[in-house]
Image 1 (cartoon, helix red, strand yellow):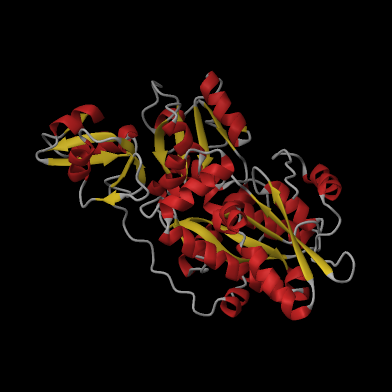
Image 2: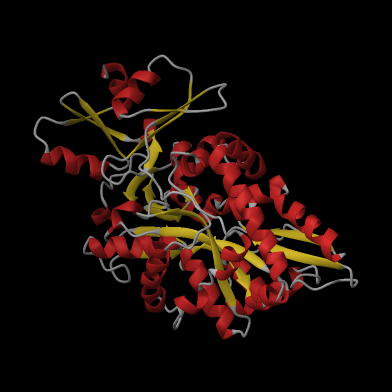
Length: 448
């Protein structure tokens, strides 16, 4: 199985030759001997909101099972070549070179995928969603622990690492503008891969890092970062999705159907067995299971549902001007890019409820399931004296789940509230006389 990896931010002219060189020559749905067809899937193992079309799907073997069943009907042997990348950019390069058939990536990279496909005469189509957050909570701006920065306004004149063209960059640009800061003139933005940006933050060579799942949660869990801005404050949906080369979809619709059915099965597995799914993804990626569960758990930041919901497509259209202004696309016809027909054909009974508000959640050591609570106070009482593997609590305003021991806690009379960011807690305290911030350990001790 191929696990080719490419640098994220190479010019497209360089990416295309690399893509050609990295392929195994049997992708694009083409038969290698008349009776064998190789389907090449590009995925991002550590971008864990794509797991139902990538890491989890691969580990469960559902796509191979669906193709084996198809092969028994048409007498063809199907082989799946999985190619793992750090971001969506090289997947797009491979797709436009005809070397990847199906790929998964975030909403901003999806738009670049659409634009590049049209530009290079290898059109692509968005056919399904993996994970989404209706408020935008999948992207976060973090700073180093102990940083003097307390709010987004403090980024004026500072250096910020992000990945240009990603949804995290879009969050940064929009959030800075709302704070009255010109992202092009008043912030020194460094275009870096997530891992490079994380290292830069740790070294003190940047003041903040704006990134997508799972980097902010991972760094917070490791004690290497503190949340400065919750992307959910934008209240604009973000998601990850599945894109396919149009030519492949037209030549091999049954294979695309098999993929979408397999994705639905992986989605069902994740939704019904979230802890087991987190453990499996952690084993495959090397990420802590506690971090995977923060995003992908039953009370996690992401909701998994393949449906192309109207609110997600509407948000995608609002992303286009951001990329146009950055010079990354000239124009994107979102309506032409979105194709819901294959999913309706492959999974006609698809129906999941819309994302519900997250509840406080506790994962005890040695347990294969978690407990949920109706209030943060109940969580605090359950934590006291327990052998805790991870505790999660939703932000009191945005609802974004975060690690309870990394949240900022506020006592307001007998009520306990948690906030993902210091600025969020301070805004609340400023508007509620008598309330005060309390250290997590003290909150656990005092909750009654």
